[in-house]
Length: 399
Image (cartoon, rainbow, N blue to C red; front, side, top):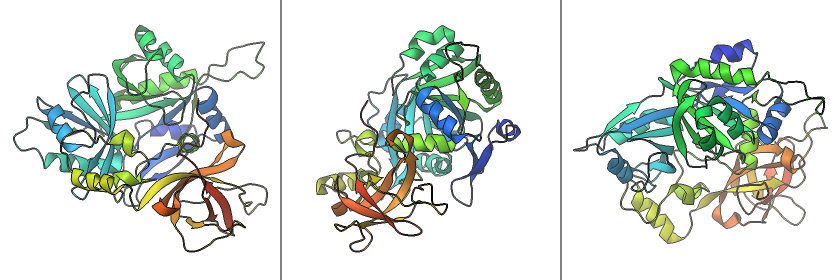
């Protein structure tokens, strides 16, 4: 799965920094930054950031039996999903492990599955293997469609400018709602998702229309307009990349499949169990494992949020650096030193501008050591950084 964005040449001409996303045998080139990470992050928190998402895949499930079929397959209840609604769900294998983390959008009578592009092939095949007498069609539309996203407090107002006929409903669109409309003259499926903790809009368009939409949006990034009251006016939109988004989503407590949990994880380990799994619906693939784990009360390990209390300097001596994914987490003694064997590992971490440059992140921890407030220390290249387990994945204070 080596996808190439339909607007890859726009990124190259702007001298954006790209890096591989995903496994070594099928990485996808994703924009990391357009060169000014601080401004890109500020756009998420103060205006709006536009990001390209070639790492996302799209599957369409349609036919008279589509709703009933999907409801028997996935972990979320879909019997009551109405057109324009979005549900989060897992697609599990027989062992109860997560084959895909889905956003399921009902678009009329068609169900649009948004998922990691690296999980598309096994999801299409896996779902297809369970079609017996169902009148259902499953179609991989990853190469024919593409996804952009707008993140930031100005996202809804900006979207209303590009879809004036739907301005009112866009400005009041709530998380978990979707609309099919014309966006900058391009047919689009727009849905509200807030992984950064700010309003966010996902824009699904055809691959052929992606350039036209991107260029229309990028034109807004050059709108400064004279304003005597603002000597350095901020553009309403800034193009950016994964690094700024990653900082914001970690602060907001949003883990990501294939980064913070993956194909070897059980739903109860992810920290997002209640958002993805219904415990009142009928049978689905992997349900016995999920139900057994629920009956036991807790899994052997679980994803938690952490904050570093006093991070060591980098090699330059003047900057703090977050621990790398895979860094070991140890229980800490009263002096903040390792006290025993490793009890977890970091999955994601970042320097948090919203918390005065503190380092925050996620770690997969053994259950007995995942207590909120527990003192731990995290291995770095030179030493061990003292940290504490947070009460939730989200490190930002409630809105």
